[in-house]
Image 1: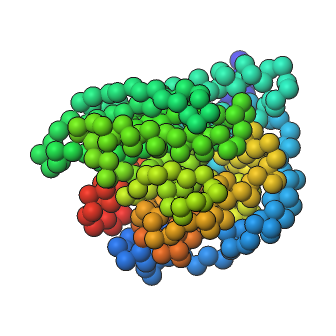
Image 2 (image 1 turned 45 degrees about the vertical axis):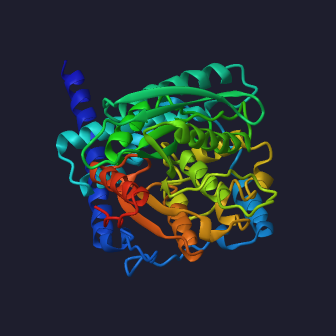
Length: 445
């Protein structure tokens, strides 16, 4: 009895020590990031200028190099990392809880959550650690297909729980043909009429996240509903085929075909205004939205994939912009099992038949894309999460668009990948609505 009590006491002390170390580290990091908070928020200006709060870019990387140099960077930096060995699920979750808790606590504290809010978000983030479990098997392993299918279903349910279910006036399910004849689907969410909305509503075409391997439009249903109500727009959740069954550039082609179909549907619907269309997406969906926005600005006769739709805006949320890049945020969060380098590389290796060569295709790395009429590229809203391996490349893409003369409204928030605070969500909804209605974009948060 005494031995059992002693063991329990020792276990409790160990947990307390881990928590104390994590929260102490969190306090230190929070103090450092809070001291630089004015530099983390990239201020919004209609002139397209980021203003005095844009931090310096000490990590100039592949976005400023020609395609030939990109291949060298990908081969050296990425090729050595694509073949990470598998990890056990238990090790992934334990590593997440012990190794990255401090950054999560810092993020939630910085956004003003209470104790209950912190606990709920920690539980949610720990659940997301299963992304690292995807690395357990590669193609060819007898368990791969079943393992991937079960985790796709798990993510679908998790993503549905991340946003509240709201009622909308109408939900329309449509099927259409992709360029290769495959049947794809999209769901349209039409909000209720309101006094401050006109007779017709703009259209937002949203691409879901999931590293091109997991995720679905069904999992984003609640996100589509809440976005439709908040923005005052018809939201089209467009599906696309996933890797590894469908390799690059299939997801991008599907994204373009989905935009073309959604625009055609909008033009035929009495409540939808086809002259006010925006694309939106987060993570892998952020890349698809960015690449699709550029595809709408191709010169006539371009050899690159294009779509004949005029856009009013693009909402790019923590996007995967450069498949292989030694940005500092990737190094800083290299071992983050939620979305660390191993997970990112695993996703990339599933998408590309030849990761080293195809990752330098301008459609895969939008910052290499020069086959664009930049005056036709729509105004952009770019949101970056500080505690995110993709933070620096997201900021780099905002700078890249700005340097090309595109109007950019951008903010870097003290949050984790895809886990936005309510005031962040409220801001990018309001900012997107302003772009679609030709109003001044409000200052962030």
